[in-house]
Amino acid sequence: MARRRVAWPNLLAIAYAVGGWAMGLWLLTLPLWALNGLGVLLVGHSLVCCAYLLHDCLHNAVLASRRANDRLGMVLSWLCGACYAPYANLKEKHLRHHADRLDVVTFDYRAVLRRAPRWVRGAVLAAEWAHVPAVELLMHGLVIAVPLADGRDGGRGRVTLTLAMRALLAAALAAIAPKALLLYALAYLLFLSALRFMDAFQHTYEVVVTRSLARAPESSSRDRRYEYENTYSNLLSMRRPWLNLLTLNFAYHNAHHARPAVPWHQLPALHRSLYGAADRQVLPARRLLAGYHRHRVARILAADYGKIGAEGDRATGFIGAVGVSFLTAV
Image 1 (tube, one colour):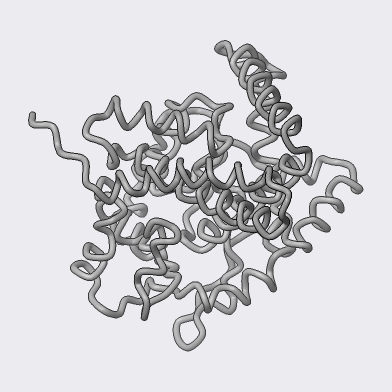
Image 2 (cartoon, helix red, strand yellow):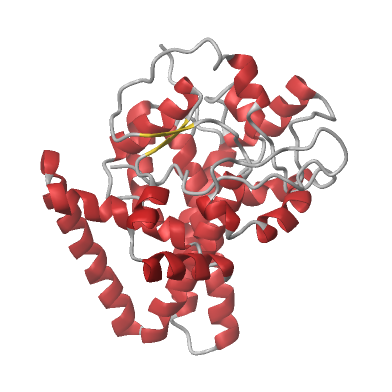
């Protein structure tokens, strides 16, 4: 089978994501606070692009071969902080999301919070009220803690080594400029917040909590129609499509689910060809922002996603999801 060529948009995106991250990191170490602020934004947005390139690597949609995609994906997972789980597990978990038409998550964070002392649960809800992505931090923390606790399949050694290496890198950054480490943490929080806003409103799938990589039983109810009707395209802008490049077109989510192997730069054209200029599954991000803020605490322990209206401002009752990131797996 002929190897496909690497499209120049992918190369530009890789150069921006990795180069922007490095330049942003350098800006964090400089003495001028204005440049530090620019560095925070650049690191945060570069990490967003790294994450969505990693997502396309999971679908073998960036480079010319599966091996090259996997290698790039491993590098990007290090930048995104998703490197504590084996890359193969990240890939298998996400592909299950597509194949099973479920939100497959590794941990039931709601059960963790319900079992936790009241002050812990209160602290998480208070942080979420302040728009700190505490649940995402909890999920990433569990990815580290669980292998350390049970040590299955060599997980304890892998996570310990990864922690040591990242701690050394953090110490080196702090030695160069102590404030840079704090600013990097701020950039990382912005990155997590951007990803979870996108994740919150892209599906109303059933959530399945499992650490098994086995396929879920087939269900006639989870067919292509179900997939379409429970997937939403939360476009950043309909009038200015170029703004959707800020998230590498991840907002064209119905098109992505229709053809997961199509790379990010072809999704707008695919969306137009499949759905035309207007589609019921498009929920513009500007209509979701108010609900994202209004339901920021209720969303954490909510039993469902809320309701999507049939007419008018359809997003008003859409509570959304949390803790469904493709960056967390064991």
